[in-house]
Image 1 (cartoon, rainbow, N blue to C red):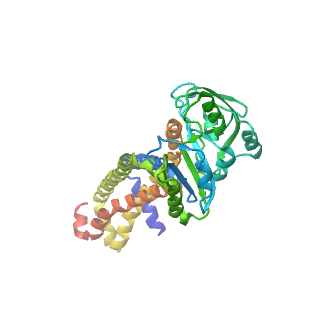
Image 2 (image 1 turned 45 degrees about the vertical axis):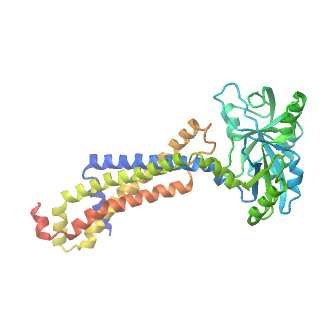
Image 3 (image 1 turned 135 degrees about the horizontal axis):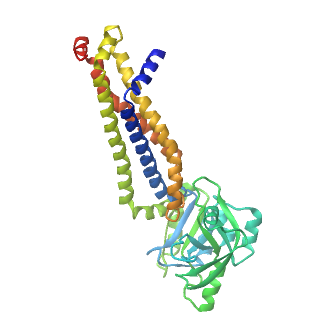
Length: 385
């Protein structure tokens, strides 16, 4: 076995330029594969972070229509409902249009009970609850703009016109690795009071309700019961699981996601062809040596193992370098695309997929050369010397 491993290692580096370029190609392919798969994961980040114990209730026509806030009390009385809160998309601008981040007016006393994935220090949560002009921001968002607790954040309203000023009372962090840390929350009461002063018809209306349920398996039953409450009303509702709600947004760009997935597979197929060509050339150059080994008593299985081993060492070695290099690349892309993808990180699943891809490339590239070398006759092989 030791002799076999030494021979594999020496054979790999006989043609240093060839193996170097092939290894570089594998490294680049693995980085590209990891980046594309991370992009797909980022697209589904909201879906993956969804809770099976939360429902979303919105207007039956579309999200563009609001719901009366008094629906909250009626929903809370439905059997199986453990809690109800709501949120309103604000859509303000911070300094200029380039600074986009999600902003929601919420009911703090109920909202964060339904979202335990947003971890908040007790003293900061208390300060936020007691200040109607207070805001709670994600750790990633605070780091991006250099915000600290106590800072005043001005937002220029678009959906709700005017100049709005909020004081950062707390910075939350994700309790889980995939939690969104780029959101901005403030008191719905602050927004609603201003709408009432202006006589705006949107006062006492909210965008969506979040409904906590005791038993996820009753989600369909509870959803139907909630919608039945408001059937034939002026604002009928549509209730679904949080995951289904998030999938609705992803479905709008499903074609793009599918294209990214296909490209990630094409990258692997291309590098597999390059790797197969490298192994075929190496085996063809050494066919006389394989014949000599056969003449010395080494069997076809041993010859095939030699070639497969060389291919796997090259593929897995370069694949490992590619995976290590993917981490800083993904981090850099996350900085550039942070405003579009709040959660952009290399997952364990993607890493294992990259390792599996490198393994498949190594095995597939060695199949034909190994078969050819193992089946060539001694006399035919020696004639090539």
